[in-house]
Length: 317
Ligand code: NAD
Image (cartoon, rainbow, N blue to C red; front, side, top):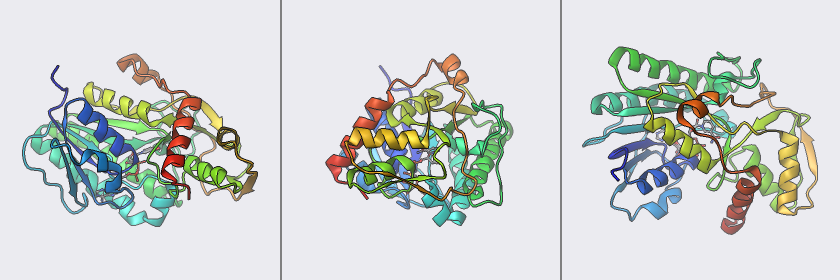
């Protein structure tokens, strides 16, 4: 069977999600050209793909320019710092890659006549006043709070993507990705799951922010990549929520990681994060009804695979 896409460009492909996406595209028979400046990702995430002649890795900052010779029928724009620790450390770059980087990636899709998929985020909903969050909700974002650099960069990227669709007729899609976890997350990237796994595996206390009653809905990476590809292969313009609606408090996530790692670590409550969303859960009606996608990897299976990967790689921070 012919692959859905002949040749894809993945910006940010050396990161956590991007490396899994490149892998799945290649497995489906698509040639892949990955553009990454290794700011928060690493070529090590793609080492196993480098010998494949259908895979090309190009070091490039998409805020400078994006140039790819030859035909391209899919552009997936993932390049952006994604963890709070990264975007708080890189606020201006985060705004540049969400704006100028997205402009360049859209320009490539326009030039090649390719389908364009923007990796947006549940953070466009900010600290939501509607729960769970449907795509029709406009969000509750503080533009001048510390997280504004990421949330507003992605909101601008969504507006730009929409303008390229309406003005230039580019075949665009926007996916709003909810918290995702799995192998190849950086142990020190500051996101809750790798932080808790690292702390539990080294017997340190798990640092839960605030009272730990804030909720998250976490999706295993294989499900997420399958969801993003389903949107890429379909015709929806989006925005489309992709995430696992299985909601847990952050304290529960910490407790369950202590259990699964067999750790004796205790839980330490530390200062709440400024503007941290109190609740987070995707309404996935759209993607379920339009594309038949739903997450299939349970928390128990996903976290066991993630812990096993961190243990095998000795990647605990
Ligand atoms: P990541 O940090 O692991 O990957 C991002 C990649 O983009 C890295 O490889 C980095 O080097 C690259 N990059 C950054 N700036 C660049 C630039 N100017 N030019 C070229 N490459 C650049 O993050 P991730 O978790 O894999 O997230 C990927 C995308 O998905 C991001 O756009 C993020 O906003 C979105 N997203 C992720 C999650 C999640 O839970 N992982 C949730 C919502 C949205």
